[in-house]
Length: 323
Image: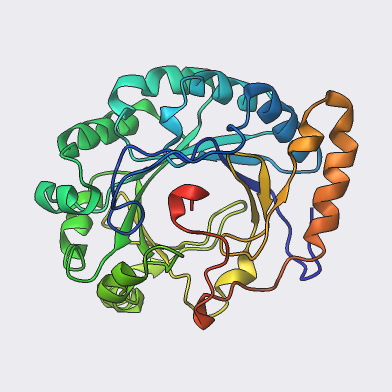
């Protein structure tokens, strides 16, 4: 799959649910509330969707939410995706609340890569940001994931001015002996978080300068990688990634498409429209039509998002599509 800008797309981010059990101030400060409309994609619909995308060349599938671990059939979903011909990496992004309890079964089902959201190494700050006092459980789950031997383990932290923007030294100590990647994500404006964005947005360039001054060097981007600029240091087991959505040429390396939990294709996280693929997920004989429809829509993919102009598109909050 390719667009008219010369970008290819081996990577699908598939949301399994819009629900989340955290109340992060930059995303769902009042918690998730169910809305009416069609239900979330069924296991059979997910099987057909992933099968079609894999047949068209996509080999990396990331399961997102909301919080994907709230799906009771998550283990079956992982197994279905992992068994799809052509899929080489099955990844998941989670808040980690259930990680310590369920990781072995997810890994046995075929999970190969994991991203865990943890916005602070300080328990009090974590509680203030997320609305939950589960910091200890989360750290325990991360240690178990380290020991589990996954192909990839990454931690995600949203950089928030006045809340966690002084924690770089603590994170560097954390990755000194842990072979994982910590990625700092610049806060993005969405339809619902304008006030939070104005209070807490901070450009990530400052941290990049600090890393370079401390001897960290930029690593080459590997196939199928996300948008992070990854830095390494010979004295550290882990790496540091920086995701700067407001940075120059951020969209030039775009390599992923998104499908919402209700089956809507989004060409961009901050796109102005979505197209439902669900009518083409009701029978196995619709695969070619589904692939053709996606390729047709890709021809209209924009070169860049419009965040710089203050346009956040359809995304009310990141839980609605999984970031």
